[in-house]
Length: 276
Image (cartoon, rainbow, N blue to C red; front, side, top):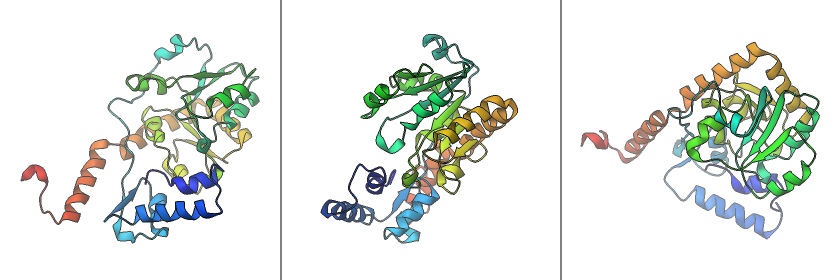
C-alpha cells in the first residue's frame, strides 16, 4: 500500500465518506489488503494502519521507498538557475503532482506572504488536475513561477535548484500516505519544510532535516522558510542531516536485499537464489 487512497479520498473531500459507494470502496480495499500472504507499506505508521484493516502483524512487511542516492546528490549550483533566469539568492521549490491530496494551494498564500522579500523565488514544478486552478489563483504573485514536470535525467539539477524543498500536506491525510518524493528531496542535501503534525510519520522521517509545521497553515510555513533562509548554520545542519538520512534509509540495494531476505524467509529457503 503506497497510499491509503480510499481514506485519503475522503480526507481531501474528493469522495463522499457516507453512503453505498463509501461502503463498497472500504470493502474492496479490505478485500485487496487481505487477499495476499503478505501486505506491505512504506512506513511504520502505515504498517500499523494495515493492522487496523485486518492484517495480522506478523504478515505485514515494511517496504520502504528508496532514493536514487547515486544519481541524486548535492550540487553547488544548478543549470536551471540560468536556464529559468532565477536572480534571487533563494529558491523554495515544490516538485511533483499537483492534485487535491497534496494541499498545494496553500503555497500561493505562502508566496504572497513573503512577497516583500526580494531574495526568494517560489517555484511549483509539475502537472496535475489542479494546476490550471492554481495558476489562475496565483495571477499577480510575482515571486511565484510555474514550470512543467522535468525529464527524469535532469532530476538532480532540478532538486539542487532548491534552497529549501516544500512539502505541503492535507491535515486529514496524515499517515494515510508518505510522499515518495521525500527521499529524493533528502538525497539532494537540501532542508525540507513540510506541513505535517509533529506526531506523524512524515515528521519522524524528516527529523533534523528541516522543519515540520502545522499542516494547511501558510503563516507557519512562511515563518519556517524564513527561519531556515536567515540562519545559515541551521540551514547547513539540516542540509547535512538530510543527505545523511537519505544514505541511512534510502539505499535501493539495502532495501531490496531486505526484501529478498523476506521472500526467502517466507518461502522457507535457506540460501539466496544466486547461490543455487
